[in-house]
Length: 134
Image 1 (cartoon, rainbow, N blue to C red):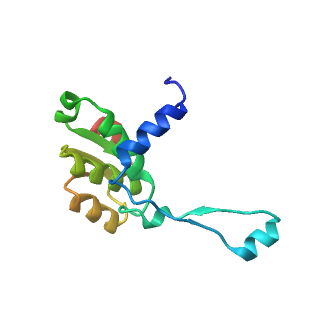
Image 2: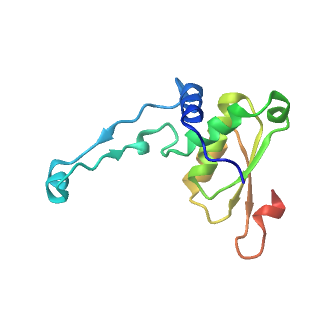
């Protein structure tokens, strides 16, 4: 098990993501705040370039890898948001990516993953093991 990230780790990740990810806004709703008796902030990660926060983790991980390891390419599995984030992070860093996705994943997510340059391998959730395929 790896150690929990430190504040320095968070700062380093922020530096790696600077200029790569969109600085998404924090939103709040006055009516909701009154009902709660406090402030509730929503991070609008749906505005991120891949539509979710998953790009942040995928890019940070790939950017932290050695050049030798990145040259080997990456393999991941996901039915959508992580697939898109990993594919886009790999594209940005020039890394070959293979993503194992269930055959019943949303067609748009499969198309977006492919559009970022990843090879998509589809599998049957009932009959196949994504881990074995990967």
